[in-house]
Length: 167
Length: 359
Ligand code: SF4
Ligand code: SF4
Image 1 (cartoon, rainbow over the protein chains, first blue to last red):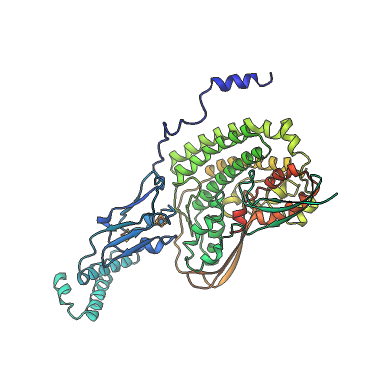
Image 2: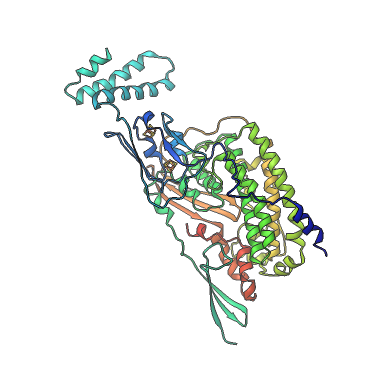
């Protein structure tokens, strides 16, 4: 008899849980779910591969291949946060169970032929490093931008082309 | 009376964790318990050889599935001390908020499992229902329910917006109300008391001598809590350890129950004192040669990290002592003399996290 009020209350109340799978809760907006890449924006810098704690990403700069083993990914979101071009994203739902092992292989445009590509990238790095230190000082910027070009020259015998383009 | 040997675990219906005990039983009364560990050994320390010290945060988080945040806090604290990085005040408070949310959901999980261990299934479901709100807070604010992954060396990488803070405050009010509604059952119910009061008694002296940690120690009347050290943001919060004196299963569950409410209160305090500012300090270079020893309070007790750096990005040593490891000798002292049917309740009362213990 002691329980009667509780029993009646529970019979009249709504169920405490959702009727899953018929009603599914809306996902939270910044849930770290399935990882995907916008391969066109990727510059194949390899930051994601270096930072990933489970080391499940491989970046092949020569061929423009970005490979990720989703079974090893731990959904930490570090690759997404450190990607310089913000081309990695996470869906707000998790991956559906799979019956087969898969590899995410994305083929993108590799950074154009090696020689011209090496220069703008090196230049970008130089300016980036110079900016936080010496605000708007133009002199170190140009100096640094030229330094990599010289390096290219030293390495490659036909470094005239990139120089011509620069002008 | 002849002695019977009964293997208990590593897989046992009441245990979520693979602990193995060899029980020597005489006429249903346990005479001796011999533990065996190593069933789920993972060798995380070895990983420090191939993962750099930033990536080790994600590894340390996975030491324990329930208090992931607090492991990460302990590890980051160690590295920050080694590298002399100053953590911004806001980051420290945010760490406290997520740590306390973890503590309360861990305790709610345990209270449910404990109720299940003595066969009170509806209480188990009630506790887990309440816990779901805290999991939702975790998921909405960090992006993941359990392994929140918000720590970085030098701070945190997620922030709370004013809207989120308002929502958290309203949610934890509901959590508090719902937890309080269960207080009478878990503390005073006749059946619950019959299964817990006077079962698995650990005296104050034994608890201290055997090196018990956390609620197991505080349930025996020793007021010791690592949060009293005032690490991180705890120095600014009003905190007093929760202590019960009877040393039995009832005392340990009551300590955890009261700590759940205390954690909710600490979240409120931390939110009230949340300063503005940076989220993370810049960290450059590698941990220098040297060693540190850091301690934090986890839901299960004191957790110790010993970290040795060697000037490279990999660590020399990363030794982790988890609270359950410290609580196994006290457990062995509690078991002799109890009935076989009480073994699951007693084992659960130390909140064993064997996967933690075997890192
Ligand atoms: S960090 Fe971003 S841009 Fe760099 S390789 Fe990875 S996905 Fe591409
Ligand atoms: S989410 Fe984490 S584990 Fe997964 S690929 Fe990115 S960095 Fe690696």
